[in-house]
Length: 292
Image (cartoon, rainbow, N blue to C red; front, side):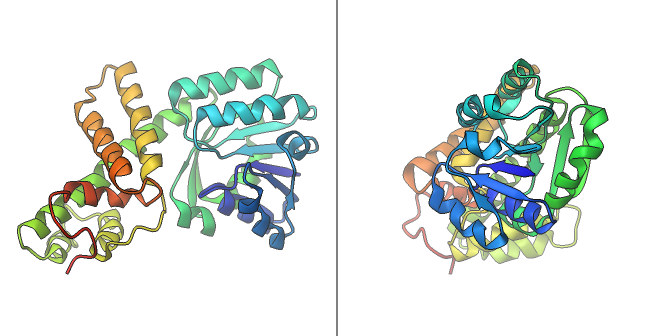
């Protein structure tokens, strides 16, 4: 019996694919209406976190930040049955992961630090990359759940943060690439150059990157349906900055990116996809719509 706590942008697709893989699945979400459509996949919608996890063998958390996970698991952990396992998939940072692992330990609950790489589409089609660290003797038990939500599993070790370190490295790259594409598109348009020529110039060469074409297409249209939100980018950029500080890595560039994502959220709509950072780079232009 599998339980997913959190059915937002990522958790919805993850729960759906766990159920589609044949696992008896229950979910809980603070806003029940967001979880209700999952009932068509024979998923039970629980009224609260405690009752949701009471019969679960494996609990998956996919929530916005460490504080949200703490609040939910403060209720859920006492209700877990003996030998239940916690797969913590939210991006919560190094300090947050240690705090959550300590919560699990206080209830003798095995804890897997298991952030995922990918966005909404990957969550929905089951092609996430799962980065996980946890007790090696339980890997075979949790692998079927990871195989349901992902196309690949990267085992990083047994300790909390063994997995999260790589997750933050990957987020530093994703945040940087998205901002770089937004900057290039805005500069091209403001200089009167067709931004499509930027994508054509990098296509097939050493500078090419599929991510640039995905985000560039949204920037061209001026439409940013969320695959990963600006608000999420602000949160993750702050976690990356904290990791850089902790590891004596210069955070000047990431801090600037954090501030630019934050500016985008404040002046536009933080619920849009992170590619909307294009709007911040183009903020002096009068037209914030589609590229002509």
